[in-house]
Structures are given as C-alpha cells and as structure tokens.
Image 1: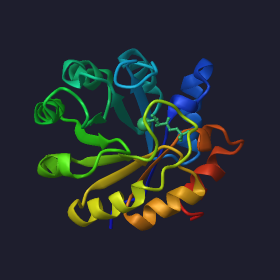
Image 2: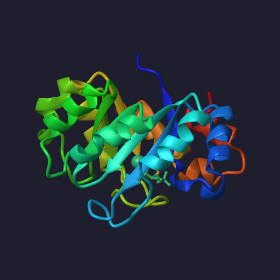
Image 3: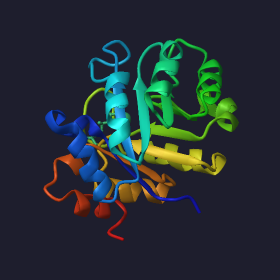
Image 4: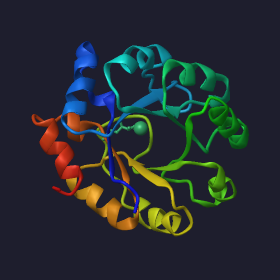
Length: 213
Ligand code: DX5
Ligand code: ZN
C-alpha cells in the first residue's frame, strides 16, 4: 500500500517568518513541504522562485515538493533542481514537450510529477505515465489558496488510480472532509495550505488530514 503523505503548502504560511513556519509544520508531523511557484503567465498570480527554495532547504529535513505553475518549465528545471527541490511537478497544459521536461528532471536525479487542471482529463498524460513518479490532480483552478474543492475531480482520481500505481497528489480546497473523499477515490498525497496554516494547532490539522489517525 502507498504511504499517506501530508504536504502543507507554504503559500498560506506567514512569509515574514517562513523558516519558523517550515520548522513548525515539520514538528507537527508533516511529511513534505509543498512549494507553489507561479509566474503570472500560466496562472494569474506571482509567488516565489528558486531563491526561497534555497533558503528553506537548510531548515528542514523534509522533502521539498515543488509545484511549478509556470509556462515554460524546461527553462527553469536546472535552477529549481539546484536550489534543493526533491520532487518537481509541472503542468501538462504547457507549451514545452512534457517528455523533455521529465528527462531533464530525471537528469538532476529528482522525482518527476505532472499536474492536470480541473478541466484536463487523463487522456493527455496516459502515454507518459510510466515515466512519472507522481500525478498531481488539481482540485481547484491553480492560482490561489483558499478556494473551494471541486468534487468533479473524484471520478478522475478513481480512473487514474486504476492505471497508475505510484503517488497521486491532490491540491486545492483540501481539509479533513475532502481529504477523506480523495483518499477513498485513490489519492495518497494531500496538499493543504489554508487548512493547515490557517489553523491554530498545526499538529491537530495534520492529524485530521490523515483521517484522525
Ligand atoms: C493553488 C496551489 C495550492 C494552494 C492550496 O494553485 O497549487 O497548493 O496553495 O491552498 P488551499 O489548501 O488553501 O486550497
Ligand atoms: Zn500546489
């Protein structure tokens, strides 16, 4: 059975004390740290880049799960890899050739993930599934934290689980309830931004994402 993985998204952390926030979620039981990179082109928002990844790398032992919401990932894989990413996920809805992007991520010995937006089916990624370590099924339109979960993603997760045996990650509107629905459908990696960082007790929030276990 695949391991349950909880990955708080630092997009909802207090950036004025980012290092401490990362340490706090690690102590509270997080498995990975999810880092949302947005370029203002692929999505209508701008967030953080390799410099921030480089500065949080030494403060935690946890894997850095980097979610690239950028138009031309191929150009930036080297700098995200060298900054200290462990898992690099890019979107299927890009201009670059996904196979080339995956090859580049593997060249730097990083795990490769591909993400699909709510409107994208499994069809476009089916052929490249054997090359991937993870598929990220977006459960909101990428761009902003704090949006409502889109439940249309659930049957998509179920179909994907039938043909993909590695990590399936969900991201967007994840809380105790929606994580349970996603787990039932076959997801095993749960990204949560506002649910974790917006709570007073990070440890309780992370526990409830594991189904209270
Ligand atoms: C959305 C990002 C998410 C976001 C999740 O584009 O990819 O990781 O930060 O935030 P919540 O959990 O608040 O929906
Ligand atoms: Zn994300």
